[in-house]
Each structure stands twice: as C-alpha cells, then as structure tokens.
Length: 316
Length: 316
Image (cartoon, rainbow over all chains, first blue to last red; front, side, top):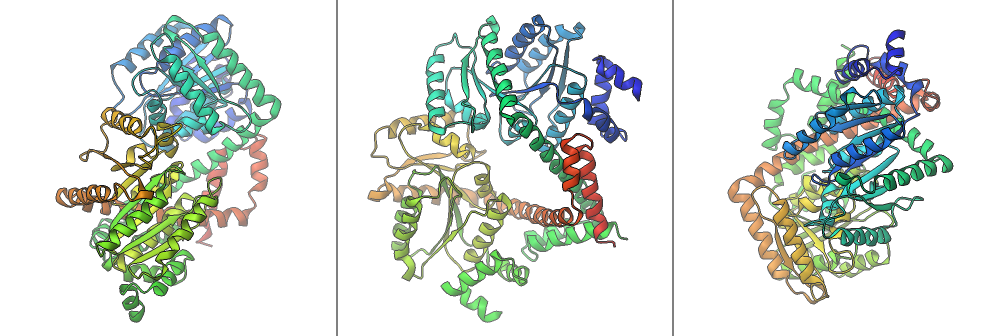
C-alpha cells in the first residue's frame, strides 16, 4: 500500500489509472484508498469547464494545456463523456487530439463515460479529482457538456467554474440550454473571431447586470479563440485572480468544507438507493405497481411498505 | 368519514380546506384520506402555469378563471408562494385580487407557502391536486414562479404546462432564469401589447426549431394580454388541443402512471430523509464533521456510519 501511494504521488500514470478504476468499480479497497488519499488532497486548483456542445471546450482545454505546460504546471483532465444525443464524432476527435499528451508525465487525461445517474457521475468524478489532487497535479480541469441538471453537480467539486459559449444562432439560448447560468465564475466567449461575438459578450454582460452574479465575486467575461491560442493567457490570469479571491476571503476553504458535507449526503443516498433496489427486487413489488395503476393502492402505501421492509431487512 | 367524502365531492370549501390542511400537516389520518380520495381522481385537467416573476401569471390566471366560469367549468387554483427574494407586494396584491372569488363555489383557491424543500413543496402540491381532483373540479391550475430546479417538479404533477413570459429587457434570459425551457407544452407571451412582443415570439420559435421540443407534441406559442382579457380564448383552445392529444395518443395516461411511480419514489425519499435526520441527531455526528473538516475521516466513512446506524436502529 505504501509503495502504491509513493508511485501515485510521483504521478505514475499506471498507478493513477489503476486507482481510479478501483474506485470506479467500488473495489473492496475503495474506502481504504480514499482514506489514504484524503490527507494529500487540497493542493490542486480544481476548475470546471462547461458549456453547450460546439462551444469548443476541448479545443480550449487543449490550448490551456499547452500554455500551462510551458509554465511547468502539471494538469489532470477529467472529461465526462456526455450520453446521447451528444456523443458524436467531434468528441471522439477531441479525445484523439488529446492523445499527443500520452507521453507527457505532467499531464494525465481521464475520460469518463456518463453513467446516466447524477449521483454516479458525481461520485466517479469526485473520486478522480481526489486521486489526481493527491497525485500532486497543480491544476485539475473537469470538462462537462452543460446539458441539464447533472452539470450543476460540478459546483460540488470545483473551485472555479468556466462556462464556455460561442457566437452563432441562438446565442443566449446556448446558456439557457446549458442550464449553467448562475454557476459561472468566468464566461468564456470562444470562437471570438466569428460574427456575433461582441453581441454575445454584450448579452452576457447585460445578464450579469440583471442577476448580480455570485455573491462576492462579479463573474468575468473573456473572449478567446482557442484554435488560434488567443485569449488563453487572459483566461489563465482571470482564473488565478479567482483563486486568489477564494484564498484571501476564506471562501475557498468554506466551499471545500461544504463540498465534503455534500459528499457525505450524496454517499448516503447512494447507499440507501442500493438498499432500496435490493428490497424492491426481493419483494416483487411489481404486483403492487399494477394495483397502483388501477388506483387500488396509493403511492404513499407502497413507499411505506418499501421503507418497512428496508428497515426490517437487517433485523431478520 | 363517509359524510366527509360526500361534502368534499360537493366541493364544500370548508371540507376541502380541512382535508388539505390535514394532509399538509401529515395528520395520522393522512394515508387513509389519500386512500379514500384516490378512486375519485383522474377527472381534472391539471395545468401548470409557470414563468419568471413579472410575467403576469396571476393576472393570466384571474382572466382564465373569468373565462372558464362563463363556460360553467369549475376550477381549483394552487398558488405556490415563492420564497424570497420574490415574495413581494405584487404577489400579495394578486392574492387579494383573487379574493373576489371567495363566494363562488365553482372556484377554490389555495395558496401554499414554499416550504423550502423540493420534496416538501412537491408533496403538498400533489396532495392538494388530489383533493381538488377528487372534489370534482374540471380544471386545476398550479401557479409556480419558474425559478430553479424546484419548478421542474410540476412536470410530475400536471397534464399540461404553460410557460408564461413577457417582452422586455432580457427577453430570453427570462426563460433561462426560469429553468423551464424544455417542459413547456405552450408558451404564453403575455403583455403582448408591449414593445418587443413579436421579437420574443420569434426568439421562442427559433429556439423551438433548434431544440425540437417535447417528443410528439410541437410546443405552441400564443400571445395574450391578460389584463385586457385578450388571447385567453386562444390559450384555452390550445390547452383543449393538448388535452385531446394526451387522450388520443394514450400519452396522458402513461404520463399519469409515470407520475404515480415518481410519487412512490419521492415518498420513499421523504421517509428515508426523516430517518436519517433522527439518526443524525441521536448520534451526535458533529464531532465527525469536525474530523471531516480536518481530513481525518472521509465522507464515505461518515456516510457508511450513518447508514449502519440507520439500519441498526430498528433492530435494537
């Protein structure tokens, strides 16, 4: 176990991959692994990169990686593959493009299948962040496609959040669809060479004026053109500013404690969900559902029955 | 009990109010009441009216009430009071305006405080719908302020959903903030006499073209000016069309069964949440949280401890 931790702390790619996989599969060692890792976490700047498909998130990350490596910073990237209808060629292409970093020990890339469950994705991502954080990466980037509620979960595992948008038909509708309006610390208007970029920036600024943004930090807007490596340094400067803000105000620490609390809750619900499934399968509730459809039993009765069995189960 | 049900079925306002309150307070009779009501439910057309503050939802409902009463239809209205920062004078004003219906037996109004909890609001609203449905109201309107995730819960208790918007600064940003983009069967552009109404309609139509909307039903857009009672008949025609669609395709029935299933789950989580709270209080987990903050215990361990106690609790 000690050797393992030493290898991990030296950013050994095989050790990192094996550790993440063990956690992913909820290996019997998982809890012990997490215990070992915890004291070594907290050093990384964990950044969420989200936004609608087509905004150029992967290109932005690729450009950011090149920039950060020049500064001798080490980076872990966790890409959460979206479920259909967004899993297409473009995304696979991005992954392949990223493969050039395979030989660089200062970069670790992990792509993660969307398990369909909010709690599931959330747990796997958190575990990976913890592994990469303990491994000593300076920066951890989490790339998610901003679609729907599941993306809100990146709030619970990042220090800073960038919402990436691009000009074009729909403009603000993208943000709408992203469902990530209010979680952004930084708005990145990518593909800023395209027509409509300045309009999109103005719209975001209007919106920020209306909503007031996050409590003490006024969200920033920055234009980038990631495929031409433009605006990346500016984005990094903003991210550093946000990191400083989190540190000086103590908000970063509070945020992390809140995230740990949230993780307790989330873990608990996963355990309970599993128990419920077991009870459901054992007891053949299908008959009761047929009765429910015929309105001869109420949802409340069925829920109570499941709960009774759930708590009776262990005492038998 | 029989007298009670007879009174309820005759839409006696006092009986309705008492029944809802009993359910709200989770009176010991609550489960029995729900059992009695269930066979009488299913007749009402349950309509969600949501949208950002200022869109004129209450005025729209008032106008719709006047229109429907002329057609001798009976209506139950459930208004979910928003939590701050939206609870202001305007909303109270709307409530008072509604009071003129106090003497009309064909209308029942119920305003509900936002309990802060998604599950909570959801349960109370569902219970009220069930009571009003069993009482035999033809139409049940649920008014919610479309802010954030909690509003998505109206999906789980309505047949048709109207998202109400108004022209003005921000336009589509309203929809964004509403977080209710994809749940609308009908978009109502209210205050359609104002500048920007046609632009807003065009923007919604653009958006619908991009997103494709709900599976088989292409969401409709209608302009109204509720304070001048304009467009209300058109809105009602669309709602009738949607009702017909739900009936003919069988989708309405499937939707209702799905909602019952969802209610089982929701009820179960409420029970489990309550149990978790009890365990938490009994066991003084505060010390463990301090350790969590110091990273001497993992969230996973604490979650496991709570679960162990939870299932051990009943067997002692």
